[in-house]
Image (cartoon, rainbow, N blue to C red; front, side, top):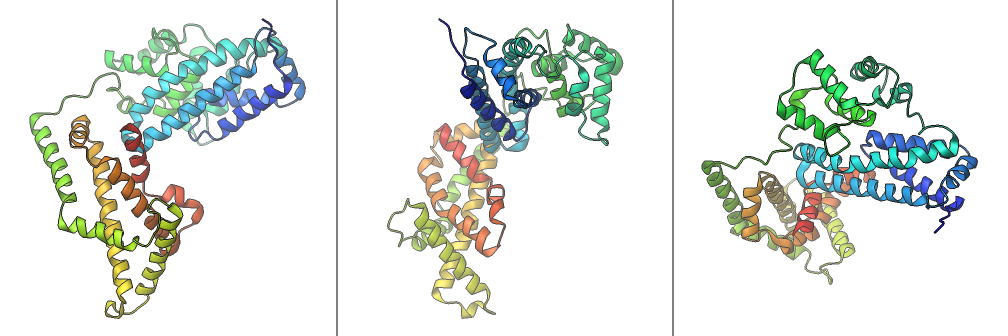
Length: 398
């Protein structure tokens, strides 16, 4: 069956891909290569027309659709992982996630798009075979000595060839000869990070850029996630006892009279909201709280506070205490699987309490940032307490 790729659809998908790549917060080298391809194709409609006609048997626009889906999926999972684990703990897990996607991206680059671009435009994949075209990807600016060293070392190993054969074997042998041997754990870790096949036999220039960008040049071996391929060690009996005590103390704290009073303060403040789940009603009431707080703080003495201002102060104490409580929960959850299992066994805090916390405390935090602190409204998403994104991911997993 003959398939046709229409100019209009292909142009739309190329534009969509470029927009997706522009929105990639920490774009990987493969993304840079794809972005260059989009820029090349969009230089003229004639380039897109030729590409559309390069394969009569398949719809080329589907390649771009698959690429967009893969990149968007990675971006989403990367953000979810960062929200759940935090920057430090997500680092190793991100490397594992990236290795799963890198093979797909490089298959798209090398096996699917490169032959089509060669056929359509009588040239290889844009800036693909000559190392000079990757210089800006390796060297950020004139002061980037690490990037310059990485670029010069690549030229030392592979001359001007951006697609040398046996790249992993050459890199592994000559790097160790110059900078010292690797142990088996280091070799397995590097192979997992940079090799593009399942047999740890080949790498590409994109992998070289990624590894030297992330770990410097020469490679900072102390920063390598050497434990990424090994299961985490089982906690000692003492560690398990201490972890269990911390978890139970946190759970017990939620049942104290002090915590009850904090929760009652919130319930009382929001009691006039007809729909407890209506975010707009909750935000309006939270904004009223902020205005009352501003009025109270403008008075010279708390002895002059009205009953409403005293109530608003109790709400502020509750906001701070409950937010801190869930931040402590976030830290304990990230301590290890044993802690997570303990929370799961007692179904704590549970979806209901998490939803309730977000419904009552988040709008107060929002009002505090905008009206009391007078923060920049455009920076709310970045300034919003990270615990909320963490709780969103916990809910997804339960």
